[in-house]
Length: 135
Ligand SMILES: [Zn+2]
Image (cartoon, rainbow, N blue to C red; front, top):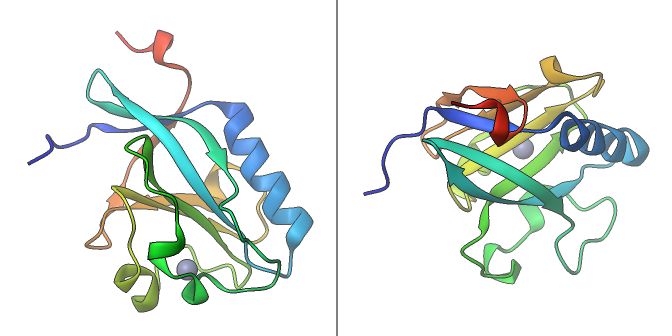
């Protein structure tokens, strides 16, 4: 069993990158893979990547989980909700992939439009910063 997380950590530039991408693709939905590692009990999201075969306009529900690349450094996914809903849909939880699921909700203005959930739909707190700021 993996130990419980104190929370997630991501850098401000990563947050801005997610929001810019989601804004640019609006009203389509986006999905990104999150690469990360554990640092002092936090899960640090080092970078976000576009999955292969992504086509604009497809909804997250249409992604087959088996089409996502397997890598131990992929800790989860982040996708957007053009509807503005900042919580996972039932479909999202059924398609859960990895340890964390991030949702960026319209209008993608900043930290308040991003949330992370575990596979039970419970919110995981996240912090903006770099691992060097922990300790
Ligand atoms: Zn969703």
